[in-house]
Image 1 (cartoon, rainbow, N blue to C red):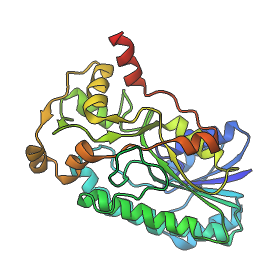
Image 2 (cartoon, one colour; image 1 turned 180 degrees about the vertical axis):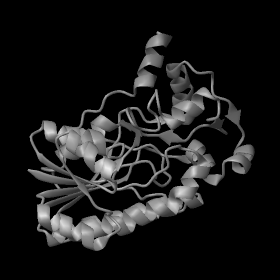
Image 3 (cartoon, rainbow, N blue to C red; image 1 turned 30 degrees about the horizontal axis):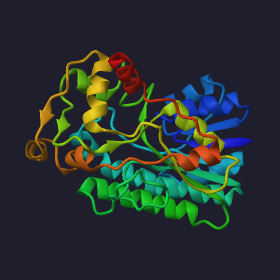
Length: 311
């Protein structure tokens, strides 16, 4: 199958391109930089240069290569994961996802693609007692940044799933970990902050985080090339409260125990979104992806090692 990946050099793009090529697909990777396009060519993919915000350039590219499927993994996130840098990047990232994503989607429809797959969120679900399923609503009434992101993802899903002429899939990924991510144990921004004791457990620490290894996310993404259209939670089997996963992650890194910060202090130092993450996030269920995609995520590495050490 000929597959175009928009955002092919990001955290998920790299393992996704490798997985697609290993499975025998013809891969066209779209990047907005010459270095990115070159890195794709060096891997054996067809690396193409195009800015997703340039509607005409995207349309020309997609019409020229005429892919069978398009995978939209567009992001514009900062290199460091801090509340300040995430806020600063929010508008830029939202514009790329909404405007750039729309350009890619329209081009895919015009070129006659048969499947469209887009990145969504598996960690911005609204309140609830149990793990969230794909039928549950996103957190549109949360803290400002979280609510804004939830609304952005809703617009993206409505665009992709509402197109009658192109079957669509929305993948609600968990927090990425593994090579090239914020939680990369060697180079990751979060990992660095944990070592520096700059990533605290806030308040109750009862916000539930759903993670997924980027290579597992890539495998699930590839499976949706042949799956039923719709929405899938692509998260692992270990949804964990911040007060559990963060100390375990620190031990895994050989770092000091994370400090604790009250909600009031965190509001002043990091803002309402950081408090929401730490105290109110809701975990997600991967049952549908397991049944429909054959999804088999690895166990969250630092929790597994922490439990083994305790025994």
